Every structure is written in C-alpha cells, then in structure tokens.
Image (cartoon, rainbow, N blue to C red):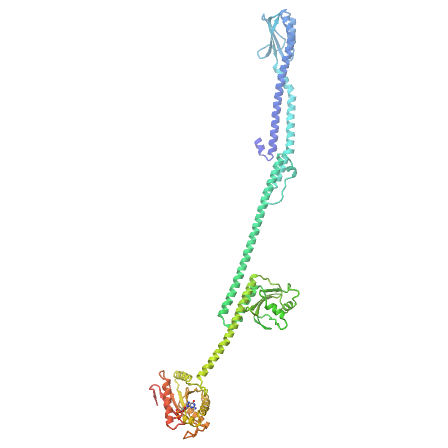
Length: 615
Ligand SMILES: Nc1nc2c(ncn2[C@@H]2O[C@H](COP(=O)(O)OP(=O)(O)OP(=O)(O)O)[C@@H](O)[C@H]2O)c(=O)[nH]1
C-alpha cells in the first residue's frame, strides 16, 4: 500500500501521512505496552510491599497464634492477609505438618506465585507462611488502568500525526507543490523572465535553498539560453549579412563583368572598325552604358572653343539641348577642368553655383555625372550621363567605368586627330608625288608627255587591242628642216616653234583622245588606239594640215617656206609577241620614207604581226 501510495501523485504527503501515522501508532503501542508493564510491575511491587508490610506487622501474631494453637486468631490473621488486594490465597504449614488455607476461592498452589516467610517463635522455626498473588487480576487491572492511557496515546498519536501532517503540509508539502507548479511553468524554449515566488525563495530552510538553487539554476540556464539565442541571432544576422554581402558582391561582379565586356567590345570595334564609323560604334554601346549607370541619357560631346557638338548620344531620338559657352565661361571651366568624375544633383548643388544650376535646369537634368576628355594638357570634350527626374545612385565602380569610357574616347579623339593630321600629310605627299610624277613624265618645254609614260601607254594599248582584236596606230612625227630653222632663227625661237607645234598637235590629239608625247628633240609620237587605216590616215592628214595652218615662216624650208611636219605611221593588230619597240622602229622607217618622199606628208603602213613585216 505504501508502495502504491508512494507512486501516487501526492506521494510525499501520503507517504509522510502514512509514516507519521504508523510511527505514531507504534509509538502509542509502545507507550501503552510500557505503561502496562510499568503499571503491572508497579502494582506487583506495591502489592508485595503492602503484603510484606502487613506480614511484617502480623507475622509475630501469626507465629504466636500458631504456637498457641489459637486457630481463630490464626485464621483471622491469615484471612486478613488473604483479603488484601491481589492476594489469591494464603498458605501456612506448621512444623507439625498442619496446613492452613485462607478461605479464598483457590487452594491450589500450582501456578500461583507466592511470597514465602519462615515463622519463628522464640528463635525456633515453627512453620512456613506462603502468600499467593493473583497475577491475572493485577494484569487485568493494569490493562484496565492502561486503556484510557492507550486511547489517549492513540489519540495523541493521531493528533500529533494530524498536526504533523498539517504542519508538514503548511510548511513543506504546500511549498513543494507551489515550487513544483512554479518549476512546471518553466519553459526552456522561451526566454521569458521567470521568478519563483519570493515567499519560496526567501525562506532560509532547505526548501528555500532548493527554491533558490532552482531559481539560480534557471537563471543560469536562461542566461545560457539567452546567450545561445543571442549567439544564434548574431549568427543569423551574420548569415543574412553574409548572404546579402554575397548577393551584393555577385551583383557587383555581374555589373563589373558587363562593364568590362562593354569596354572590351567597344575597344575591339574601334580597333577593327572603319574610322568613319566611330560615332556609330560608340552609340551602339550607349544603351548598355546607360543601363550600367542607371541613367536616362548618355552624351559624348566634342567641345572646340565655344562650339559644342554632340558626337553620340543615347537615346538616339532624345532631345539634344543646345549648349552655348560663348558667355558662360564659368560653366565651361566647371565642366572642362574636372580632374575627377564630377557628380552633381540639382538638390545638392551649392547655393552660390547659380550658373551651374541654370545650366542644369536648361538641360532639363536632375542629376549629372561627367568626366572631361583630355590629352593631358587640354580638354576637348566631355562624356556625361544624366537622369531627368531623380537623383542618380553613384559609386566608385560607376566613376571608374565613366573614367575608363572617357579615357577610351579621349584616346580615340587623339588618334582621330593624329589620323587626320597623318591623312592630310599623306594627301600632301601623294599630291607632291603626283606633281613630281607629272613633272617627271612631262616634257618641260612642250608640256606634253615624255617618252617614258608614252611607252607605258603604248604597251597598255597594245594589250587592250590584243584583247579586243582591234588595231592600234603609232605615229612618229618630226618637224621638217628644224636644224635649219635653229640655224636661221636661233635656238630660242626654235624652242618657241616646238611649243607652238606641240600645242597645235595636242588639240588634235585631245580631239581623238590620242596620247601625244615629245619623243626627243623635234620628234613627237602619237598613239591611236582602236584605229583602222582610214581613221589613222585621217588623223595624220589633220595633223599635217594643222601645222601647215600655223603658217610659221621657215626660210630654210625650200619647198613650202613654212613649218611643216612629216609623219611615219604603223597600223597593227597586235599579237602577244608584238614588241612595241619593233613597231616604233617600223614607224620610224615610215617617217624616214616620208622625209625622203619630200616631207610635209604622212607615210602609213600596216604591220603584219604574224609575219612581223610591214606591208
Ligand atoms: N631649238 C631647238 N632645237 C632642237 C631641240 N632639239 C633638237 N633640236 C634641233 O633639231 C635639229 C634636228 O635636226 P636634224 O635631225 O638634222 O634634222 P632636220 O634638220 O630637221 O632635217 P629633217 O629632219 O631631215 O627635215 C637639230 O639641229 C637639233 O639641234 C630643241 O629642244 N630646241
């Protein structure tokens, strides 16, 4: 039962109650037993002493009456002894063997206890006196007298037990239960502040110590819990910060990657592309640039003195506000002399910077970031990115990107400038070369081609004629009796005549798109591509007539009296083996024939390229 009680929910109280009750009952039983023993022994002792006292007072009378055989006295004396409390019987035996019994219920002496006294009379043993006690009666009386005490003891024990339980309950069980209830309320998964009631902890007894220990333990656990929670929260915060940091880093890297790719692409495009497509190439990368800057517009301005021009802008169809620095040097200086990326927001602009504010308002710009284009000495342009209605979010990376973009455009502009200078120089050189070439290929006196370019043209004409299966004519022209002219009119006059004749023939040549050259001295050569015999004959005749028509007097010319020319010509349908020199030689021979035939005429022959014969 105790076991089951001890297992019950109110185990301590029940156990205590049972223990206290049991101990009290045992104590009561022991007390009653002790009381009984004491009462019994006390009664026996008292009875014995009373008897001894009585025997002592009556023994001489009994001895006397026995000796005197005064039976009446003897019996009375014995009966008086026998009437004493708890005396069951009195037995007397004389030395003569005579027995006397008191007149009590029992005369047996088998189970009785007794007191023994020797009877003397005048120093002589005359008999024995034995007194038997009624121990059962003593016991009964003892029990009877002990019963109230036992009841009192039991009541007392019950009372003590009850009081003890009440006291235990008041001072111990109830507090333990309150403590248990308090402890039950502890939730270690929460950080609520918890306190065991002060009435439990303030006590100096063991329970108070236990309550304080629990409170301290809880405080320590709570402290640890709070510490762990704080650690956990800090860890969470760190983790979230780390995740945020990683995300920001990733975005930055993505941004940086896009920026690098943009600049690399632009750089490559500018290197590969044609110089005239520069603006186009820059314009292509501007949308990405605007995205990277988170801006509305990107401008590339070229600034020369007060003249500002947009080289490229984004968006393409956006309004490009006109910029005039003619009476706004302050703003120009502000824009062009920045050494770092300048960012300005209409909200934060210095109150004194009225010109700058007006400038931004004129542009319709809320926020602006810019960097000048410079060759290190002088600024010649600007890259700027702007927002219209909001502040621009700017950072180091964006500054760096704008700087790198501006540096690229600066280098590009410098390269363009150098390229322009180089092109101009090249063009000058080409023109000079052309002039030199023309000079080298032009006869100084007549301004006609000289022999070298003519030979080249002649070879080309032969190839063309061969390709087209056409005929080509070469005319060799010589002024008649020119030595005589020099001799008569002088060398200088001879030079003048050479010029006149050349100019006149050139007119004819131009008419027929025929190259004409001074071949040397007073000799000329004319080439008639795609010509047949008739046309060649006609041109030759026209040449002779043209010179005759000049009517330059020549006293040394016996037959005409004027300057005339003789022409020898070869008409040829060339083959791949046809040699220009051979044709020139043949034409020369024809010229010789014309001279011999009387001059002032043309002698034209066909040259058979297959047989290499003049026919
Ligand atoms: N003034 C002048 N005379 C030149 C020039 N080149 C050549 N001559 C002269 O031209 C003359 C050519 O003379 P020749 O080859 O003997 O022939 P020609 O006197 O014209 O007689 P034909 O040719 O037979 O009619 C020479 O006296 C040269 O000195 C020149 O540039 N200026």
